[in-house]
Image 1 (cartoon, helix red, strand yellow):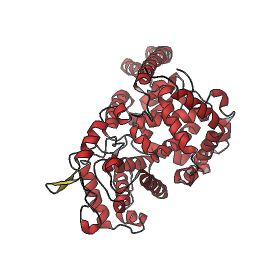
Image 2: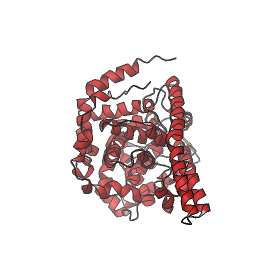
Image 3: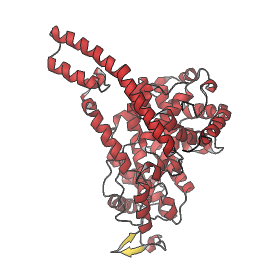
Image 4: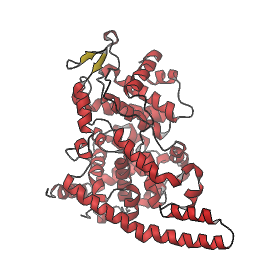
Length: 445
C-alpha cells in the first residue's frame, strides 16, 4: 500500500522548497538551533494513579469535590480515573481504539512488516557498504601509522550503526550509546503518556478549554524566550496531572503556569522567577498558590520529571535522513506544535508525532519519505497518514489563524512556515479529501 494518503505527488506544489528558501536563513538560525542547547532527553513525569488530589481541595479557595470522589486518608481518590488510566495505557490500540492517529490493527501488521523489510534493505544497501568503504580507508590509515588499530576497530563498529565520523568524535553526543539511548526513550515515552480520555471524569473543564490554556502557554513560552523542550514538558505535565486529578475551571490556569514553572526549572539555565510567573497570570494567582501548586503537582507525579522525551528529541534523529535540512526541520517544528492544540494527539507517542511532522513537511516541500526516513524514524508512510490528515484538518479550520502558533510561525524568523503550510493545505484540499476517502474504503480483514 504505497499510496500517498495526504496528496498525490503530482499535486505537490512545484518549487515549494524554493519558495520557502526565499526567506533568509540567518534571520532564524539562532532560534532554530536553540533547541540543540537543551539536553535532548526532554523531561517529564511518570504517570501515577496512586494518589489523586484536586489542585486545591480547600472549599474556601474555590475547589469542590466531585460527587463521584471519596475521601481516603485525607486524599481525593478517583477510582474511575485510575482504572481508566491503567486500561487506556495498556497498548497503542487501547489508547487509540478509533484509530484517529494510528492504523487499524490489520493494517498496522502489514506496515510493521513493510518497515522491517525497508530497514533491512537500507542496512544492506547503504549502511553496510558505507561502513565497509570507511573501514577500508581506516585500515589504510592504520597501515600508514595515522590511526591506531583499536580506534579504527571502534569506529568500524559504530559505522555499522549508521554513525558518521563527526558524530563519533563529538563526545557530547555519546554516539556509541545511541541504540541504548533510543531504546530507553522508547520505554519512557510509553510510561509518560497522559490518559487521552481524562476529560471524561473532569467536571468543569472541557477540551476547548485545554486548547485555550495551551495557546496561552505558547504565548508565555515565546514571551520569555524559553527552550522548546520546556514547552513540551509543561504541556505533558498538565495533561498527565489532569489524567489523575479533578481540577476546577478556576484552577486550570494555575495548573498550566505551575507546570511551566516546573518545566523551566528542569530545562532552563536561567528560569523565570516565581514573581515573573505571577506576572504571567496578571496577578491572577499568588506566589504562595504557585509554590503550593508545585508541591501538589510534583507529589502527584511522584517527582519524576525527567523521563519525558519530547518530539524534538526524535526529530534530531530523523533529520539525519536529509542531512538536517533547515526548511524541513523548521516546517516540521511548526506542524508538531499544531498537534499541541489538538487533544486527539494525546493518543500518539512523541516519536510518532515527530515522524508525522517530518513526513508532512517533506510532502509539503515536494520530498519523499524514502528508506532513509523509515530507517531513522521507524515508521513507514502508511503509519503516518492518519496523523498527517489530522494536522491538515487543523490547518484548514477557519479559526486556525486566531491561534498563537499560527502567528508565531508566520514571521520571517520561522520562514513563514504557518503561511506556507496553510496555503499548501488549501491548494491540495481536493486531493486530500480524495485520498482520505480512498483510505477509508480499505476493508478490514
